[in-house]
Image (cartoon, rainbow, N blue to C red):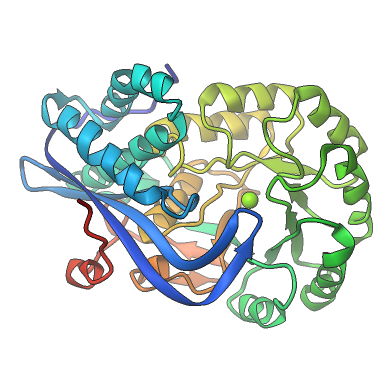
Length: 382
Ligand SMILES: [Mg+2]
């Protein structure tokens, strides 16, 4: 089992409640994984026998119907396990959940959904402990500043001028656009984006694993003159190591990835090859804080850039911000989807200052959810 981070704070869990949320969005977003026509999120509320509560979030963006299944893993598998014993701290609970579900994950082939469900519960437990100790998580986890750099992530390659302008006005200094299929189809959008943001801002591309292995290096060549900071998931993460190494040698732009690495071992394997200049774990998919804090330290120590992947509601975004803040890294940057995202934007009061998310001094994640309002979007499960 993976190394985990912990703090002594006894936990006696009374309930673990998954909240599946579906909020319609006006303009559907087309991605290589499917069309996104509503915002779906899975929040988790943990209540201790003392009455203390914490909120977390489980990654559930794809497949679009996957949230209900992950919610059921939380309510039918993790909740009874957590309610049946006490734990010395959230890290011990994270480790115990992984151990208890190990054979189920193997037999079902569902390591991904189970790890994500555990990660979301872990985030809720850390929020609870932070509130109990009356400290914001960034501070409790050893961070020196409550402000984290964010980059603006655009869901589409073209037509983003207005969003980029909005991002510039909000103080963002880095912008990532999506690209898939043939680069030529999208290259104009990148050339225009570079002109719009100027030479002082960073520009990145995310291919979402969609390029053919044998053409990815050629694709990268076409970005060479645009001073790109990275190309993300140029090819699927499970491509053979030799293919990744070959690509890294031939790509003029640095490679990024990590959102689809789902174990500490997977990260260590990729860190060892040095292929990725930028590593982007998603703590709502694997790790939460208990697995995420030691992983972040390992990434920073390796010299790679730590830039957490996140596309979530408020609990997931804030958790990722606290995790990045805890890593005390100068070049880390948090993904921030620039487009309107109801599960995040309708439930957040945190400020952005000069392209940085200000986590503040509120204990735990600092999330205060209006449960009555949240309930209007809740999808009731059978
Ligand atoms: Mg990505």
